[in-house]
Length: 238
Image (cartoon, rainbow, N blue to C red):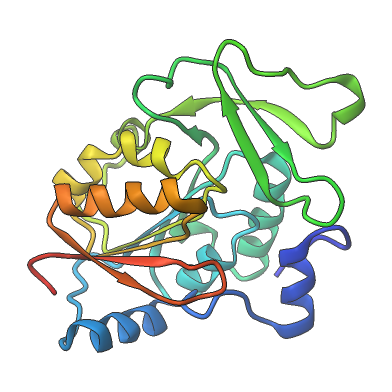
């Protein structure tokens, strides 16, 4: 797997341990979900949606396990690493990459800037959208870029050929969880994923996760991971 040589927490961890999150593999996440709800989780299409794929640990794990992957990642440097990993593992044909940031329906036409965390975490980008955002300066050219934005629904609707079902979703968007969920109605109404593994950044993101679960008949389970992830399970499953 291609990782950054320096100044990136995720890359350093992968280099040292050969792994990342505990559930970054379809078998492990499905087994954990089955243990939580007391029954197997059905898999229909073997499609995985990776929202905020970063350098692609989850995407690569699912693609090499034979799943079809939709990877959404707005940061150019992260996508370059992901593409290299996919090529050397011969997994590129199973992955569609969407190079856009996800925003709420009300903000989707506003300009967006994504800034890397300085210092030791260059792969993490914080997104800011709106008419009053601070633009990228010349001095931060390697840490900042203007990115296109769309709602999750419009990004999925623009896929060609289209996708009819998504089994598993992972979301890791560094504090933009509420904005992504605000533009995700079709995800729940049309694609109906069985599982959504979601990293939550703070109380507001957690509330958004629980609110959208209640709205669309999903149950919520705390995973007690390093980043206090939650798992949304479709209500008719568990």
